[in-house]
Length: 327
Image (tube, rainbow, N blue to C red; front, side, top):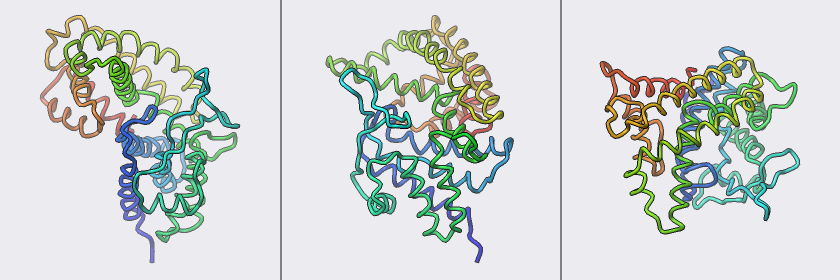
């Protein structure tokens, strides 16, 4: 009997959601508890778009995109030396503390059975994916190919196949390039400032809500331009497919244009119209505790639905298309 791939994907998607909720830590490194699953969905969507342009097995990428970070929860804080430098392994990847889950499910029990503790999440994720697919009756050849693609998602080696390169590019772009990455940067900076002020018994929530323009002046005027300027060429150079390079460059151009537009709004923030771009960002700032970007974006899409026009509606439209991997 033929396997219903859509049904298996739906079952595994539910398993992935369940797995990420087995850890209780609200923040680890640059990641909050609700981040990784949304990242996975965006990577899968973007990989689909890139594969349509570059070629590749769409079924392999659907499974690999969904499962590429299945073992990510075990990555604890990044290990650093006394001088603050990050510990790297022999391949140049960051070393992390081992972070066991608070609860168990099929994935974590399998992780233990396969003795995967303290392995890089691309390697452990590849092993988990191969077994999970086999358990659901999928051919061994498909499981092995999915595992190969997942294993390469941190670094697509020379001579890698189309699927490896597409997943690597999609994963790199989502976390670092474009408007979804800008929101990630926003939430990371909000969290860092909250932790910094908490050490001095400061009230960050009261400060950021009462000094929103000042926060935007610092973040959009200082932090974001430095973030973009120091990374743009580096990440463009890391792209392994022509389509990804073009898409990443277009995302950077769009991002820089939006940052400039938002900077112009800051001096008149107190008098800003409800349809301004900063009013859309306000919604994310106000919902910064364990944010889920997709539902927040849906709320904003309804708020600024046609016939609404203006910067907020434009920004939400651009964000939605990037989140959906359309560009």
